[in-house]
Length: 46
Image (cartoon, rainbow, N blue to C red; front, side, top):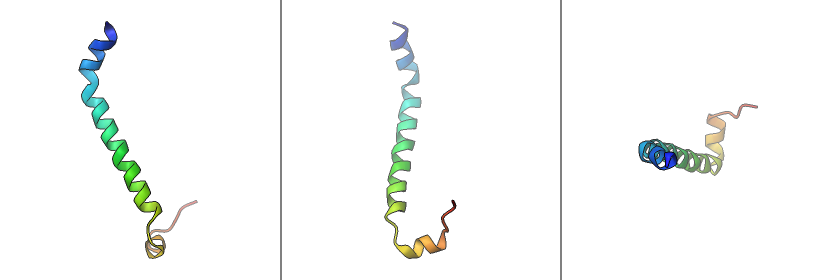
């Protein structure tokens, strides 16, 4: 029963982490499909 009490306490933290990860994945997809002129402005680091 310890598991269910932890879920009740930590659901906000899990929701926050999931929202941040979703937004970061969307931003990475947008950055990957950016036009070439944006890639010249922001150089890629190796």
